[in-house]
Image (cartoon, rainbow, N blue to C red; front, side, top):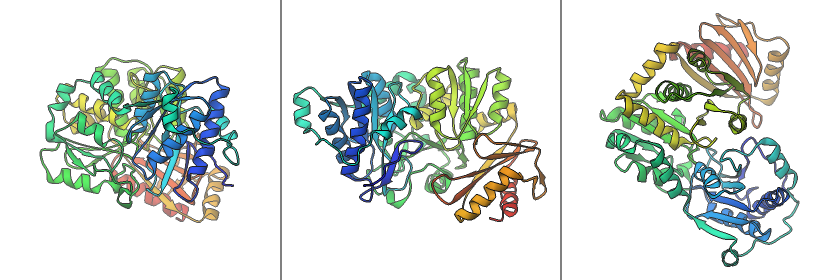
Length: 465
């Protein structure tokens, strides 16, 4: 028997090794049992572009039917936010997404979405995990039988989502950009919706290809060099947008093909929501997000909460409090006025509307941010180290924290999730171990990219990695 363990955002495993039809049945049965214990009646199920997505989604659907639960099943691939929004729009109790998000193409996964349209809270995920049987005790109900019994309704989640986007933004203003937008779908589930919403944009990697051409569909610069080069070669492009495999994360580029990281996008979102849309609410960020968010929040008179790393912590706060902007360093961003969910397409449209309403370029808007909080740059190294060495470094961080990194003197240390060394003057280093692989993550912020690299190199020299 394969031991199935849910991570921070659901269960993920390698297809045909551990991610099999039989194991999907087990997880689906556990989910169905948990739902019945909650007196739930309805579930939304969808899959992204990964290999076997339709088969695995239909397997989960059949198990729900065996337990008498009604399923709203997406036809064709959909993004994670489409399922999350579908849960809200159909008044369902849970969403299931067959996706491994930004993981390599050999993976698939099983995400759970709450009735609020965001990640299921950790205690509920743990309760589902506790129900996973050694072997599934029921056979999936035939889908035609389910449909005949009123337990299955095929639902166009993508169209529901597209109409929601149209209702949420000034589409005439956004579409005036025409072919000045470049979009890299990374072979992911956002491709069809973006074609419908921005028909004149320039599209890259927007074909169905479950192999993702062998690359993990994560929207970070090293995976998006083709988009960057395309923008640099075409002077008319004003903005580059990229989404991950299930389109809940975003990467962005300015008109010169320079990467705009999540820290800068978060600051732009807060500026637009507060100054231009006149919204209130708490700012919620994970521990690895730039300190500049705290500075802008203070300037706007807004409260800030810092969470451990993981969007689930942000979603949990959004479920019970008024949050104007929430986000994490890895591209998962959320805003007031939408579901409490990471949504790469929705965030792209906020930035596009911001540009359209102000008549400013992305560079000019970033300068407006800098005028408020000062310029900065950020970078991160994921260093492969032996597990023994990784643990040695963490032990030093815990017991005798590093006092300096090269010429950089440490002023203080914060330990919400990892070890953040505050170096003053808008500089910091964060050392954090991966919980699943022999990798040490080293994050840094400094006034410019050259010094950020210098700070990372100094840290790695001090750590001996």
